[in-house]
Amino acid sequence: MVGILNKIHSTLPESIPGLLDSVRPMLHSCQITCAAMAALIPPSQFWRWKEMWTNSLRTAIFSAALVEFLATGKLISLPEVCQILGIKDEWKGRFALPVEDYLHGLISLVNELSRLAVNAVTLGNFEAPIQISIFVKDLFAGFSMLNLKNDTLRRRFDSLKYDLKKIEEVVYDVSLRKLAPPPQGGRQI
Image (cartoon, rainbow, N blue to C red; front, side, top):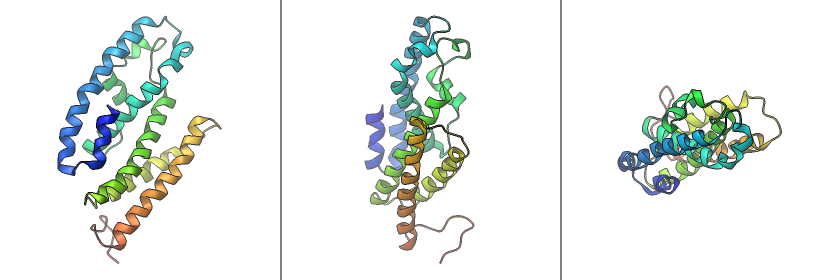
């Protein structure tokens, strides 16, 4: 799934929808795995076994978030991710999607979008970094409102600052060279 999504860095914008269509069935196939795990885990034993699949679940969340952003330009919500992965409310004590894992998936999304901002320019898509910049700034503002403890989520949140800086540098270069129209409501210098 992630291997196919990595092709976005060398794919022209008009070919992205076809790429996303090839990833969606893989995302939906995660429903089978989630249902199988929910059936195996005894009631109230979720936290005991959670670490066994955390990284895989975060990768699936990241993939769903990237597909949603590339398709609509919007952030996928936690309930939407649960729906895509087939995670049901009645599984709460056995299998669930913790908010922390959702947030880790979103941070991975920003990490990938900072890469995409650079690569989009090399493919001649000068508007993409501006759209990515607006999206990432909003996401960063949301993360900034959270009171994160000194754990892995906090350290990964700190990486968002560097990703945001990288995206802003790309937008600055594109704007300076007047390769993209000014944002709506903005004026040209």
